Length: 131
Image (cartoon, rainbow, N blue to C red):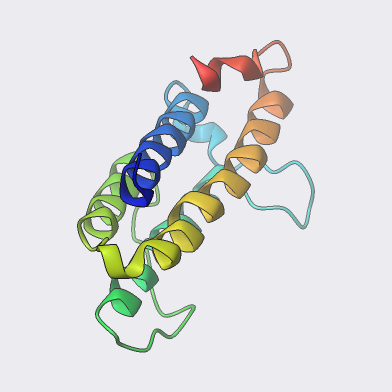
């Protein structure tokens, strides 16, 4: 398996995990936080959209200004669009950067999303993300 193939596998896995955690979460629950200083699913999705936007910018060799992206509708559909653009920008030359911005970063936030889901629905089986 090449590094590129491994990255593509990981990109697919973490996307599925985000989808599973949020797929049947009612829209009104997207603003729930586990703590006052934590992020809600809506805020996490907006943040992940910005990470995708930043990756595309860096992949082009451009500078990115964090906090500059305003995501009008932070939801799964919007995140999918930003992520699709980011995945399309992955090259053999930027695999490490793609891992940092997409796989590593998204895996970190999957845990936060799962914690919020448990806050909302304590009986939810966290192992669903591995299905």
